Each structure stands twice: as C-alpha cells, then as structure tokens.
Length: 126
Image (tube, rainbow, N blue to C red; front, side):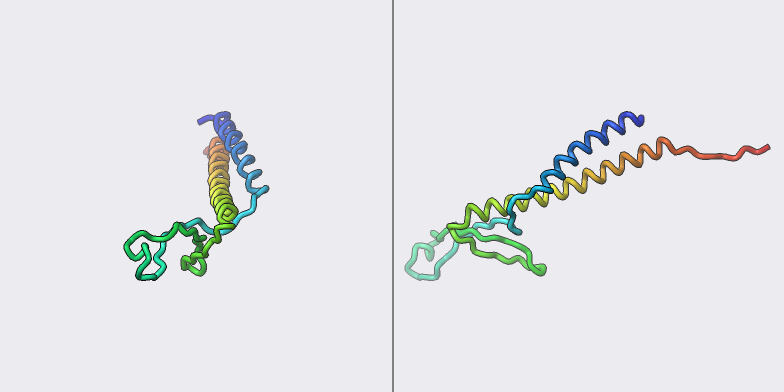
C-alpha cells in the first residue's frame, strides 16, 4: 500500500474522529442505566393478576452497583425524561467506544507510514 493511500485513509478517519469528538464534548443530560419494563402481581388473591393477567408494564432503571444489578422504579411523570436520558447515556457510551476504535485505526495507519519510510542500513564490507 502506498503512502498516499494511507494518508487518505487517515484523513477520512480523522474527519469521523472530529465528528465523534464534537458529539462527546457537547453531551446532553444523561442518567446511568437502561430502561427495564416488567409486569407484576399485586398479591391480592381475588385480583385479575392472580389468574395471570399481570399489572403493568412498570418501568425501572436498571444499573450495576458494586457488581450487582439494581432496579429503581421510575414514576410515570418521569418516564419520558428518564428514558431520554438513559438513551443519551447509551449513545454517549457508544460514541466513546467509537472514538477509541478510530484512534486505534489512525495509529495503525501511522505505523504503516513509519514502516514504509523506514529502511535498514547494512555496512558494506571493504
């Protein structure tokens, strides 16, 4: 592969990196975790849920705390805001991984340029 082609790849990767970095530098409001929906039984023997027609869905914020999954009930009044913030968190985390991958690809291509331009020296015998 010639150096010109490698430079073009690096330029293209750098454009993607700039867009990703701009997104990361201007984050929206976020909340750690993901949305989990569940149907529940209320415990009343005469209720419809005792026959299998469960109540819900109820939304929870699922997150890891100390290696364990913790569910936090989300009030109906807060559902839209928390759902949006959890989605923002997911997008932000994904963009961080993308930035890391782009940096690695740029670095690998720069190493290729170094390999193309590096020669060896052999001393001639006289």
